[in-house]
Image 1: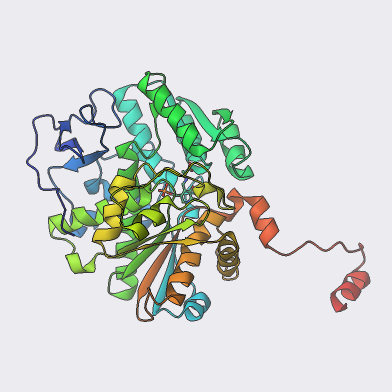
Image 2: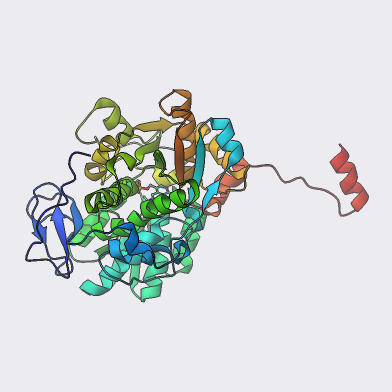
Amino acid sequence: MADLQLDEPEPEVADDGVWLTCIECGETFAPFEGIRYTCDSCGGLLEVRYADLPTFEDFDSAAIADGVWRYDAALPFEEGVSLPEGGTPLHDVPRLEDDLGVERLRIKHEGMNPTGSFKDRGMTVGVRVAEKVGVDRLACASTGNTSAALSAYGARADLETLVLLPAGKVAAGKIAQASLHGARILEVDGNFDRCLDIVQDLADRGEAYLLNSLNPFRLEGQKTIGLEILEQFHAEEGAYPDRIVLPVGNAGNTAALYKAFRELVESGALDESDVPKLTGVQAAGSAPMVEAIEEGWEGIERWEDVETIATAIRIGNPVNAPKALPGIRETGGTAVAVSDEEITAAQRDLAGEGVGVEPASAASVAGLRKLRHEGVIEADEQVVCLTTGHLLKDPDAAAAAGSEPEPVPDETDAVLDHLAE
Ligand code: F0G
């Protein structure tokens, strides 16, 4: 990890040891004064920086089950708008582990968060920042889960919430969540990337506070996925995982996990050689990050036409690519594209061990199978796959991938006859 770049002196704009730094030009900004999502000077992505970086001892006093705010030493303040979130299980899946032929396989199931996806970890921090800077309307573009989480956390904070969704491309469970939590749902005649273009315009015009992962505070909350994985895996296996395989859409999680590990390395809590290899998986129909990794490009090229059954990651312009590509490269990871058939097969594999996930989540396991088959991932590796959303998010995909209901008469003997057929 050559370019840690976290050791800059505390600038005057810092507030309680916290500030924002542009990852492109290095300009620094006060964290909670004024509203900005990108650098005023060059438009680069911003990152939250700290005068004091955490060690594992800082987290000792609380249990994993306490969730995101157990990690307040790694976050910009001590308390968020909380439902509460985090503290998700790290499942073992012995049959799948055996089948895939890796030494150890664990599933970090982020579908077990309050609104059923990892987005809650970002919103507990991001919506608190919205309160701090004093806005009255929140907004996001979304393939579904961000909108579900923002709607719930916005409701909790009693703030108006606006969500822009690609019409006809969001799973039923997610729309139902945004609807019942009381968001205004705008269905855009265009894909997710267009929705995000529009929300950025609205934010630039001061019409709403943007809570997509372009907002650097969202990623601070999502760092806790990485912190939990390290602590849980180490507690059970006595070592850190060699590799973390995760689905990639806007590449926020890839960026967030990388930042969590960089901060631990910088504080001396984690040896550089113990940083897991970040391995991103995209659907073949929307794989600009995989293309950039395979071609060795500095940045991604936006895909205008994207399609996949994994609608959560149906994204052609991953806005966090400048943070995530170094994460994949510097940790020695890679990126791989999988077909919709491979995604559905992996969804069935996980369900077969009791772990119910939505299609995008299963992409991580599909990617592991492919990379194992290609010999990129070795048999002696200890691997964690991240599953990002719950099965019930997309009931139509689950029903299509699962068994058919069988009609039977309302008589026990007829039921037995049917079973004997
Ligand atoms: N998995 C699920 C279930 C998601 O909902 C998303 C992103 C991802 C993976 C990709 O994560 O962006 O950090 O690379 N969903 C966003 C949304 C885009 O609007 O809900 P990422």
